[in-house]
Length: 507
Image 1: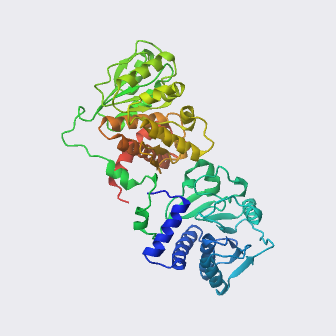
Image 2: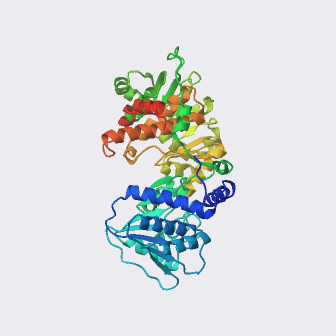
Image 3: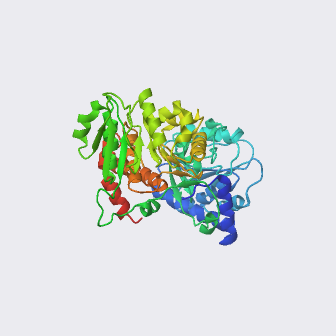
């Protein structure tokens, strides 16, 4: 699913109007019907009044059309149209006139002095001031309206985009003048701003409403931003042949653990095997031997001579894939062993945790990474590699530059994890939940990715499928156990259900 900029959304609207063909006022009516139906589905019994705050553009036209439809449905609706410039979008003007002709409708058109109702708990506010066309922060009376809405106890539903929020970046926005919505009803496709953690307080929950914008027009719009979808992941998932055996299902090498950090190796190893890996060798310090053999008896152990850290390398040429990082620490001898693997290993590697911190301390090693390796930093680890990032938009662009410069895949972990591809594309993962914000969750992802790579999935396939499955297993675990009680080991236990769901669901 494409993620479009504000300008591209307008381009898609215009293409639909021209090529369907459909009059712009009729397309607005179609959108308003979808918005109204979803609103009534979510709020069938509004206790107080419904207030519509409409701006002078297309977003305001949507809001006024909704006010008419809600009035005809028997609801008490009070619409406020802010027309301080005296110039309305033609479709907005048409919907103003239609509302005025609707029996029982209440409309206040504000042209100069601000009139603002007293909002109470139980009231429902429909924010239709501004949508994707906004290019500068709200100011003056509009900023005051946004602040009044935010100060109220009413429930707030934003149409397409909370007013004052920019579609792409809000680095230079006045965040005090952005409407705080509880729900955002968005047209057709997600907006980039929805996928940033700092915007959650403005967007609330969002849902996408299909209004039949042109598929042909959408196909013609070029973008490097995508939301991954279940049917795409299902298409990537392979089936085992009848004659499969452990020798054909891949042999992976995991360099993990230091004294006191054996748990990281256990989680990554169990995840790799649960994801279908034929054979796993774990390289770890001598002190971690017994605990790993008891916890993961299926794994082959390659002990380092040092009791506390990894200091040496083994011949990695016999392995189909390698993962480095969980719990290894940052000792200089461990760093040297990791560096030696970079020289030795031609196949893509999975690099996580302390291996990323070692890279951050030795940035000249980045150019030695095997092509198509997969780096899985959380935001702080990413900043160690690329420098300070002021916001998620900047972080995404810097991760994207890292991926294209060194021809690697960079997974910036978090809600809507960003997969930055060597091609410059950025994919957002829709699976996962806050319960996965727990120690060891990243180690599980490392094991999953190692397993898929070793089984012969191409790196682009492995990174997408692995990140999606990791989040899906977390969602299934949270559904049964609750987010608060979710452990990293639960993600591993629910991987079988994630595979089963992905194979059997047909949407």
